[in-house]
Length: 447
Image (spheres, helix red, strand yellow):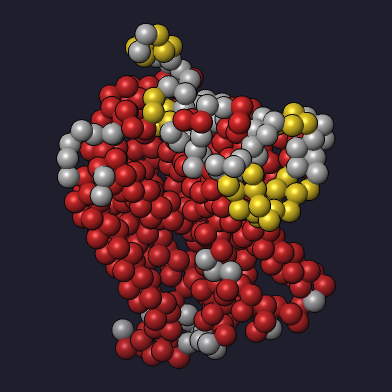
């Protein structure tokens, strides 16, 4: 394997795994805090057990996310020393602040896990909520650093030198808010659907039905917030991309020729050599409207840009289509659930509705991975957009393919460990977390 390809593959693999751990870490504490709030309000012991069960899952995924995040930080220096040499002093601030948020999160989760019956009940609840806030802050700060790569600012680039550095301006670059908003909404959608799907499966298995029903409804509520918020945040992100990275937008839509009233393309197979899209459904003028609120707005095509600055068009286009497809599917599922919740309560216990959520378990994370593919691959061939090409930042050290194999083995091992630990947590629900189960009461009598 070529060293440059190996370095890119290693980063892609690491980010692909870490983004799942990071998004769960951003959202699961809020589900946990909501269940805890329900317990404090209703004094229903099932909510207390649910809070404790979810808190153990949060702890497991927090530890895993810390490992994968640390690995990523080492990889930046190992694989891309040319990038870090210049970029480190400019966008180092969000990374340092992310470290602060991480330590706050670690302290808060320790207080929450061991604070039962020891702290004031509302202070204890706040510790759990603080886990979510700090996890959310960590995610947003890392996204701010990534956004800087898409919209570099906070410095003057003169004769190959990075001068007049302003870390605050670099952190709050033009891309950070659209990316952070869309990422946060996507995290709620993906994690909500994943958690709801797991509990839907356990309800269908007739195991601890009341416990898992309460969990399912909380998770589904968060999933709906994300599903219905995604088109709005996506619109903000798309308009931002159209303004800052028109070539990425053109690749997303496989839009080759500049035209007014540009159509929105659904599906299709792009032919990069011929500059056309086959078998696509084209909705007239919609792309122009989406990027500018003007049906006759001119949208630049790929042919207006140098060929050597094109990203891999097919990869970006297919990833964008995958993200849109699964996003629409989750909106449809969310709409059905809302209709059932308000007008057809009897549907909420039907197996077909639970199966729908079960099948949708991975949909949010598939859309999330596809969205990050659009963001990262769509920026190529640049590592710092318009300033430094990726090939110029890679390490000259040989043998990177062996590093790729090693890191792949670590991430696969981490994933297997997580599956084992979370499966064990689910199996312990009757004994440790569900007070309505006979096994829980037997265990308490013995103790």
